Amino acid sequence: MTDEEVDEELVELRKVKEKLIERTIDLRNELDAWEKAGGKTHNKTEKYQIFIPIHKVILLLKIQDFLPEENQFEDLFNKHDPGNHLNKKCVTVSSFVLGFKFNDVDKKWISDHKYLYTAKVKSKVLEFFMEITVNSQDSDKNLEILEVECRFETVKKCYLLEIAPWIQRFTEAKDTSNLFGAVSDYTEQNIVRAKILNQLKNRDVVSVEEFIDDDGGIMILLHSKNNTDLIYLEVRWILRFLESMWCIDNFFIISQISAGDDFLTTHSQLLKNFCKNKINQTELEDLWNKLCNVVEQDETPSETGSSEIPI
Image 1 (cartoon, rainbow, N blue to C red):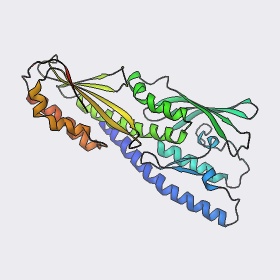
Image 2: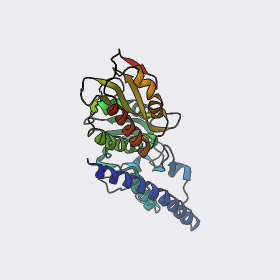
Image 3: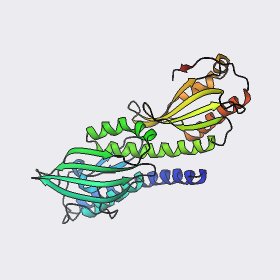
């Protein structure tokens, strides 16, 4: 993906977020007007759930609503509900803003009142197979989610390791709203990281590798432009879910290899800037550019043993 394509993806994501906020207000007003006009009254907190995790407005209805059939966004239940058009609009908007595409959606009867919903879900950077088991014993309008499972069969290991902790957390909690919200946030942050990595690959002092141990991510080696074996720093770039901020954020683990204490002392403030929370794309690009510049300017680092900078 080129830088221009990445920029277009980011612009698109930001635009649809703004449109969803506007559409959410419109839908709320439409629902109020419909009920005041004598429509069938629904419990809003039961039928229409609005979540705002990760600084996004995410509309998810019941399980039957967010699994549309082959992207037609048809309601799988309540076919005769006169207000069903509202359900479809919510599904369409929520899927649109999150950037998801649903394929091969299916519903299977398991036993008694238990059903299994399956779908292939695809964002701009992740593709996975999702299974949701529900119990509709009380009514089809009040489904109980019994189990949520996600399988990532085509995702590279370096990315799978970094998403695994929060994927497991939200699936075990059967929390589909925050699951989709985190995937959406991860997608946006991953696009930003990909753009910066593409820029770094053009620098003579940078090598980029996939990291397939621990919690994954991308390993960036900063070395002498005249001798690639003379490594200044190893920087592991991970996208982690931060519970304190309830979002996906950048996390850097910086290990000194052979640059020497002088390099760390001289550029310690620059490295500390990587520790800040919620660094935006422009700030990240500026930090990486400055780091590459100082590495290019230092051609004679002293060789020391490996040590690690706590981040």
